[in-house]
Image (cartoon, rainbow, N blue to C red):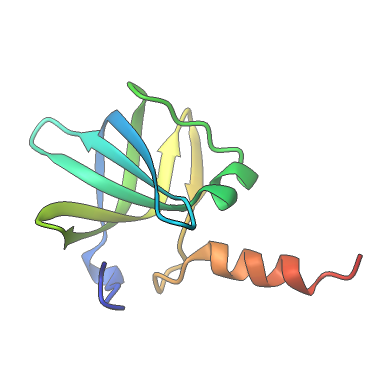
Length: 114
């Protein structure tokens, strides 16, 4: 989606209303359609399992704020979220270099001994 080019210097924040929520692909990536006053974005949050473990509960018509970088996917303007603010709570999705936090979380979980 971003060809490994997550440039933190291009971070921006958008705010808008969630108009659609999709689970896409075999890993069930969560995508939101977010409508702002100026345009509509397709926003990639991350895998469903990670968001569920963060107790993220976004529904259609919710107002959210998304910080991330713009990109393009299939001719659409997209947004790779690094953080979302919803219901007075901020959920971090990527570190300052753009590395997905779910990758670290998955590694940490797999290294635990039960």
